[in-house]
Structure formats: structure tokens, C-alpha cells
Image (cartoon, rainbow, N blue to C red; front, top):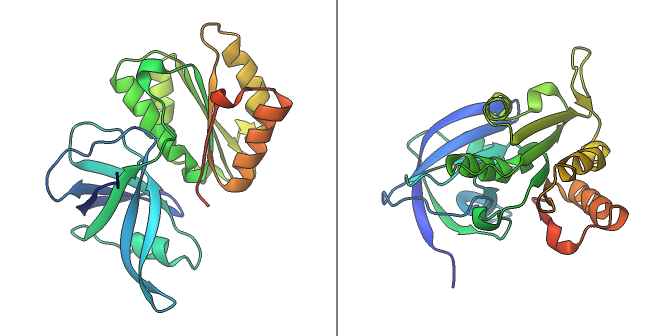
Length: 245
């Protein structure tokens, strides 16, 4: 069955990082925005490229479903990217058609296992959706997120995630910087550097076998998948991936 098409109005925006903007939309028909945390939508943009009118751009839903018509997207402005440039200039009140939700990169709470979430940049947005939904549902299954970015200012939703970790002992947020400044005292290097250590620590807590959720650019996703599947010997069923390039 084809995913539905609907219209949504931009109601507010805010910067999350120098090149990342959060867009909050609301369905024009007022119906609840129903989706599984981790899914994505296609935005149908009225942008002409190579004489062909219209662009489709896919974005993971950064918010958790809450019964309201609203949803959030985090859009990275890509240099010379017509879609992201257009969206970064969009003003509240504008209406766009969307298709979705779609996707199988989800974490059903009824069967959720302890999870190590591994992301770079806006690849953490489906993880944010999963984490917020789990906390809202009073789940206490461990969720650890390791987020890799270049600079400290590139960490999106950082304070929100730190607050979640302070309030809920089963949540852990681990940012790591590949180009840290002199004042940075946290973890350094690519996410791959920290996966085995964090996995071993999570697995040592006992209970169900952990699952890995990996989202980001293809190069990182492929590298982490190889680390998990080949080097660490994890079965396919425990490794969930999604790439956005």
C-alpha cells in the first residue's frame, strides 16, 4: 500500500547548529501525526533542478509521536544543495506536501532490547525520536547514544539529551568530536573508536542481548556495520542500519 500524501504548514524554526535548522510542521488537516519512531517522510519541494520541476527530499522525523498534528525535522544545509538551501530559507506559514511516514528503522517498545545507538550529525534524529518515545512510555530498557560530529558546536539537541541522561539512569549520551577544541574534555575521535568499549559495558549489565542502531552517512554506516558484524561477530538480527546519502 502506498504511503499517504498530506500537507503541513511550517509553524516555527530554530537553529540547532551552524548548518542545521529545526523545522516544526503541523498537518493542515489537523489529524495526529502518526508514525513509528525512527521513520521518515518525503518533503515535496517546489524547486526546479536541471529543468525538472520539483524535488523530493527524505528526512527522519526528529520528534516522537504525541497525538498532535505536529512533527519536527532537522535539516542540514548542504553546500550548493538546492533542497536544503530552500528549506533553510523557508518562513513560518509556508505549506508543503509530504509523503509518508515510511521506513523500517524502528525500535518497537514491546520487544525493545538494550540499545547502543551510533550516529553522526543529523543521523541522530531517528534516535532522538526513539528515545523520547521510550521515555514518554515509561520504558526503562537501556538506551545509549554515541554521537559523532566535528566540533562541539555541531552537537545538536545536546543539552536535551544530557538532561534526559541526568533524569533517567537507563539513558546515556556520549558525544565524541573528531576535531575537538582545546577546551573539550569529552571523548575524541570517530564513533568507531568507542563502539567496542561501550558495547562491552552495555552487554555486561546483563539481561537481553543488546541491539545496535546505526544512522549516518554511508561511509560511517558501512564501517560500523563491518565492525559489529565481522569484527565483533554480532548476528544480523542485532544490527539495524539506515544511511542518508
